[in-house]
Image 1: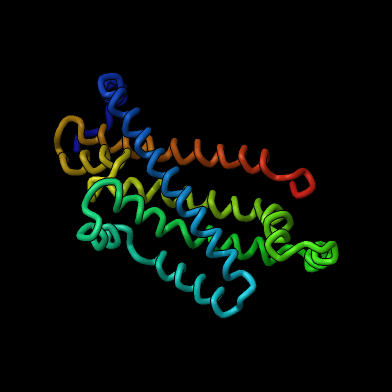
Image 2: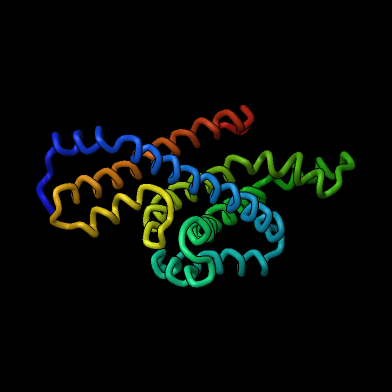
Length: 221
């Protein structure tokens, strides 16, 4: 791989700007889609097990073990089932996103004060209404933190998904690694890597804004 050349990198960006932006859009799209699915599934699982000790422990333990599976290994395993491209990528990103979302949902719901729960029950609220109008709003900042952690995981793993022809900036990284010694090998790899880092920072900043705007003033630290 040739040495770093800033002028060459800027020229590379200028000539391929449209392609780079398209890959950024694909990367963002697959992350947002996967996070949306994982958030729905993860919160539902957390709601189902938060007050049941054995299922709760088993669910969190299973999600923790699942997270230890190397991403390349998982992608290789699901490819024969789902083929190449978006489907194995989304499946893998949802798979890895579940642990922080489920865990934080459980923690958030369990941290709601028993006194608040009793007050709501004393007002005649049903368990479902207490969950929807009391517990989930109070637990929301903690749940959103879990989604935020999952977002950072998925951004990085989405780059690795280029191994199975997944969308996004990983294509640039793999193209650079597969063309070692060529003129633009380093430019491809650097562009993909920098793009992933910048996207991670932008999404993290977006989560900070979302957290502030969707959390009631009484719950803000």
